[in-house]
Amino acid sequence: MIVLRKASHAKVVHLSALFLTLLFSLTSLVSCNQPEPLYTSINPGIPPAALQSPVKGNLPDSTELHVGITFKIDPRLLNQADQQRLHPGQPSKPQGVGIDNSFYQKMKGFFQGIDLRLSKLRTYMSFQAKAGTVARLLQTKFVIHQYKGRTFYAPATPPKVPTDFAKTIDAITGLDNYSLHPKHDLHITSPQASQISRNGALDCSQASQTLTLGDVAGAYGYNQLWQRGVHGEKMTINLVEIDGSYQDDIQNYLGCINFKGHLSFVNVDGHPSNAEGESTLDIQMAAGLAPAASIKVYQTDGNADNDTWTQVNDELQHIIDDNTSNANAGSVVSVSLGIDEADISSDDVRALDSSLQQLTQVEHMTVFVASGDCGAYADETFGDLSVSYPATDPWAVAVGGTKLSVDGHVNRADEVAWSHFPNIFKCNNSWGTGGGNSSLFHRSDWQNANGVNNKYSKNDRQVPDVSAVADNLAVYFQGAWGAVGGTSAAAPIWAAGQALVNEDTMQRLGTFGYSPRLYYAVADKNAGGNAYFDVTSGNNQYYPATPGWDFPTGLGTPNLASFDRAVSNSLA
Image (cartoon, rainbow, N blue to C red; front, side):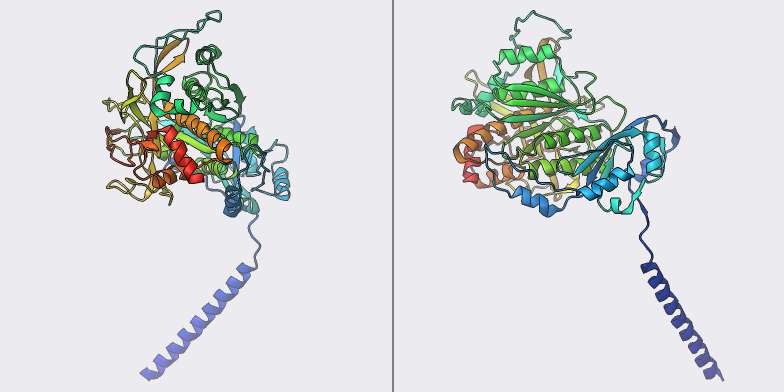
């Protein structure tokens, strides 16, 4: 009897299992035949802890939002553009690598009544609209959070878009202002002078004990290219700015150096509301070292209470649009802005990364980004190792800073990693050259040179790549000469140097080099050579400068004539 009961129970269990299996199969079959959901939620790219912080209230519906949509790009199209043969002096044929027209028409239908702006490469779309309108379209509302002593607005629930849109969108920016505002990487010391009109008389008496750009040109060999007639003729240096400049300051400086190039300004998403010295510094560094170049200043208002990084990305996209037929021109870009990697949303990072990649691979530009001025602690908390974005982006050449000494004959006498004895409670852009391991990006295969693998390495993107003088440089600002410090100066110094090298190799070889990969290729092919001045003294408050690549100064500072020869050898 016991055996029969067991057999009967086993049959019941078996039949039950068979029934459940059949039921599951039927359920799966039904679900497979169900249509895709009409709408899909988009991750806003903000840390969960921030989104779960207390809500203070609603963002007024009348608030004007500037929104950017970055589309996914087929990597094969980018690689094809990257491998196109360069033909200096000839216009390039723009190649769309983004969405097709039918998809764009669908988006226009969805955002009906809103003026959409699609980039020429069809990889980015931007628009301006009131928060209430955007909330209705994306099936959400905007609320204001209190988080870590500051406020930011963001969608209360993940925004929703049509499912076929979601498959194509890489990032949506401007729906929040979680990312901290970009920081200028400079510190200016100058007399507190007001704007003084001198009725056309030039003031060229630079402050004593400061380094002139003639000193820099002599120390780094820029003057050797000048002597061969290479001054930046027909070359373009694009500057990305979030502040403006005083016309009198710029005119005085350009007059003192007998500038023969062309300077122009492009307002993006409005115009700057003030001049804080960054744009002034960048213009003067670029003009002083490439005195016949065309300098285009893309400027926006960095003081608006929104996501300034969306505006910075719009500036990069504006440069891309302006150069869709200029991929053969050897132009360069300089960015002297950054923020700790932890203080920028992942959507802002993806959008900027896409623009930097397009500038590099599609338009063959080298983008230089200042590595920051708080030493090894980009978040301005002394002892907390961190680095600055977008310097850490693998499509950017991160530029660190040094302290340079020259002798009476304008020769390089000494150079050490730039840092100051710190007030550990406040950085004030004075702790020194930024550098360290990225928490966002792995190390690229091209970042390979003597010193890259060291006891501090973590197989992450390591910055900076190169460096240049970032201390005690003469600058004319607010009607007076003063001294500037910061990697903000180093980035345009390298940009000007690369523009000169591109001009030279285009004239002699009919081609030019670009991208961060170039700098390590040159170092690798010139093992034991002198394409860079290797800085082996000093530190950035944590990492020491050492022989070869190091965290404070990267591969070193420009030995431009030798660097030019090394680039030529790598291109031959």
